[in-house]
Length: 503
Image (cartoon, rainbow, N blue to C red; front, side, top):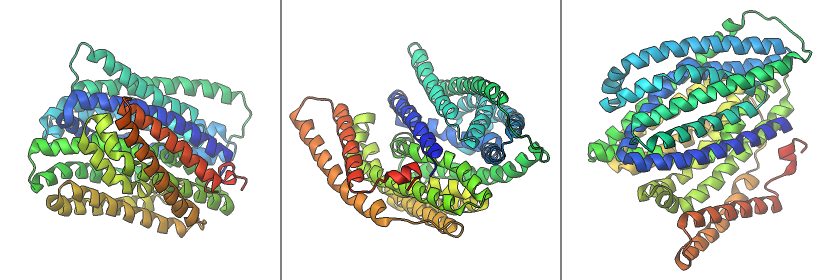
């Protein structure tokens, strides 16, 4: 894998982890201020956001990234700028229309689809962020296509920081509500958008001073729409399935025998607390996948099978490794993390039960990026639809019988199916090696020993000292990470050639 990909991934990862850490404190504050039930109501709003974001930003961002990467490979920088500006016009117009519809239709959406009238005001506020999100996403797609990660990475940090600071300052004099949390989100998106616009202006001034080839190849808006519309349609359908899944879980829990408030509380814990932990290590695979797409696109366009094979093999290996590391960490420390960080024992129990999901969850993100880079968006769509449909069926069948444990089993089965299906599709186009010993067997044995040792150390220190449990968890986590890294290097699991692209 190329150095630019690795360096970009590492930079996105570092800033992503900082953003996630800030987000953790934000989530802790929200969970304490809102409580499990209101946190559940707050989480119900985001499926609507996901559907709307898909309409005005998701497809166009990927289309911009892919087309910019292809134009940049031919030295057509003027073409890449035209792609960006055309994409912004398309996305901003779509975002404005969507914002108007949601702003005025919020009571109907809240009452008819969410079944929670309390969500109406929050939805109206959320609509104000749509135009900013659309512009930001287009600039991000442009940067990813150029494999320039600084602006997208730092803009995420700006967005998260402004959101937290805004809510903290305002909450001093006003009680925290779902509406106030959404207002903080809008402030963050506005700040991120302004930051991206300023950053892009400065970058374009620098690019114009350089000499580049200019090629005119048909209508750019038409090409963007021809690529983004299928993507948007596919992702819209997927987001609708996601939204249905979100509404289905509380309803299925009620069928199990729980009350409305109890169902919302469990949903709030799962989506607002447990999944925050579970997705935290995914910062690495998310960063890798975003930057992997243009590399795969370029290599496929040039028919460079060697680069395709090496990039895919390295990306898959380190995604699985991350999943194995996270899985063992959450299995041993999950209960303590939930209790200590969120003061909610159930969050920790749920996290431990979901730890087995990590390898499949993280590698699936990488698989989808590879398929998109190959231009096989239809297969990404098919795999997502099949996986989500299977999950919805399992939710409907297992949760009413097993309760929340039916949720765990459903997620594991559907995510395993999704990863295997995507792997099968990729293997038809790219032949890449997979070292099972250094990716699964050796890491699992080493992590089993290291994680169990440091968990015993944590239990001993928690009893024998007066140090706060949160600090002890952080200390043991750092020691576990450093020890694991050292063991992986010594035993040959991590190889320098894979990271630098020289091996």
